[in-house]
Structure formats: C-alpha cells, structure tokens
Amino acid sequence: MKPVTFNQNIANQNSYLITYKNKALVIDPGFNGEAILTTIANKQLLLEMVLITHGHYDHLRDVRLLATKHDFLLVIHADDYPNLVDTSLNYATSFNGSFQIKQSQRVLQVKDNETIAFGTGNITVLHTPGHTRGSVCYLIDGTLFSGDTLFCGDAGRTDLAGGSPKMMKESLIRLFHGLTNETIVYPGHEEMTSIGAERGHYLFLSHR
Image 1 (cartoon, rainbow, N blue to C red):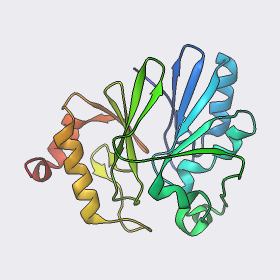
Image 2: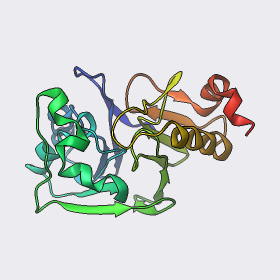
Image 3: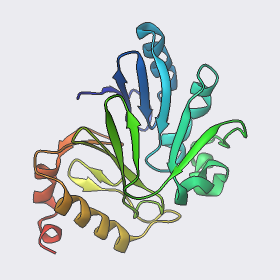
C-alpha cells in the first residue's frame, strides 16, 4: 500500500491520500487541501473519511476546505477533540490563522486499539500521547502513519499544550515493541522511514 503524499507547503507538513476503488481517505489534510481536492476530482473519488493524528492547526487547517466539496467522517482521538474548537490548543494563531470545526461536521471520537473499516481491511488506532494528549498513529495494512509522534531520526516535541516527555517515551516504547522492523512509517513532516531504522536512534528505549 503506497499512499499519495502531499507536502508542498510552508511547514513541510505531510498529508496522505489512500484509495480503494473509487473511495478515498485522507490523513491530516493540514496545508495541502487544494492539491488534495484536485487529485480527488481528477481521479473521480468519493472522500469517505479524514483521519487526524493530532489536533494542531498545521494538520487540521484544510479540513474545512475539504468539507466545502465533500461530506466525510472526521476521525480524531477523544482527548484531542477539544482542539477542534479551541485555538489555544490547536495553535492556529501561531500561523496567523484560526480554526474551529463547523457544527455540522460529522466527527468520530476514537480510543486506543479501536478499528475502523476501510476497503477490505481495518484501520487500527494506536494512542501515542506525548506530542498532545490525543496523539495517535494509524496502522493501515502494516504501514504506520505516525503524525508528530515519530519522524525520520527524531520524535515529536513535547513542550506544547498537552505534551509530555514521559508519555512520549512510553509511546515510542510501545511502537518499537509492538511493530516489526519492516513496518514503513509515514510521518507528519519530512521523509518516510521504518521502525527498524528508527529503532537504532532509540536503542535505549527498545530494551525497556
């Protein structure tokens, strides 16, 4: 499974488009909404779901733009649901913007280990707090979409609202213990990596 990646934006923020037949899901539309809409229109896709890894503006902003053209289910962890309406939590003002979800938007608040059907398989929600309280990774067909929990050679910052170094450490341990070295990782910023490659950067974690 190879997603279409969008990242031509000021924050080098990654959005992902996954398709099954004529159905599509998007992960973290962020700053890539126009390009996503163009691709969906060109491929004549039906956008069913938008998955949010965590409730920060650079991952949320273009949810509203997608909603002007499509009716979809928005998926976010219950602990980050408040970020959809609170600019002090989603940091929209840091980008000279604002964000508040429309009342008409369909939202599914998920919890750890919950599964969501898509195509012929399931999406597994892995709660990985540390960057925010409700940060999650989505495991789809053995591929991990890690948001701002795990990057290539780095982990997400823990000094923003809801962040926790202790929780981040526990989340990384969970990923390294629970996933194989071959698991491909598509992060929220920068380039893709793998659990095996990142295990080497966090060797002190993998044995605990």
